[in-house]
Image (cartoon, rainbow over all chains, first blue to last red; front, side, top):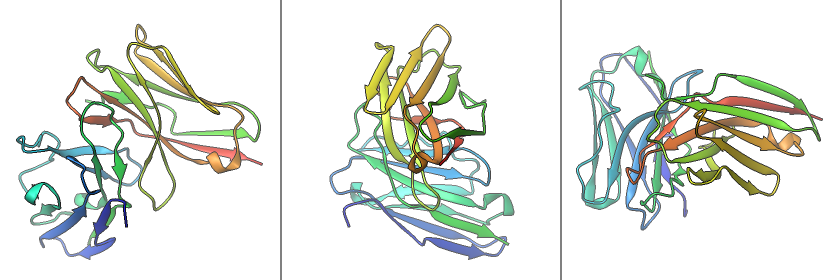
Length: 114
Length: 112
């Protein structure tokens, strides 16, 4: 499809395990974002990639979280040694970059840590 | 440090009436503001935006007002329709950073 694609849509894991969440942005979009929404909370900024610039990692909550963007396209968000408080919907978005702020979101990956 | 705040978690209005959703921000460096709409199990979708050089932007039934001195913006929906029932997020951006900071969201219910 032409939209932002995220996988898996649902992931249930045990505390302490590592998880990887994948995002395929819209083709041609230079900017890619990860946000998360915990139950009853707003959208929390995690990380932002823009072209070849160093990513803005200021929102990552701990060093257990990391993200990569390979070839300026697909991105993977990795959470190591998951904790129950990591349970949330992880949303990826992409945009053409610039200053319009119009992000196109995927449907999210729902992570449940037991 | 919540830089963008939506203090009303929910709002209920009658179909055909006006819906007013409010948002406050603390960072005076923000110069671009947006509203997103989110249905359950879907990602947020862009609704309307406003630059800090304006105080109003209108698109059909949706109007966003910006009061820079009060660091406050609002989204007006007139007339409200049941299909407008969703969670509305306010977001702000500073300059050309491209980084959007979102509020907590307000759940709007429009009753037929």
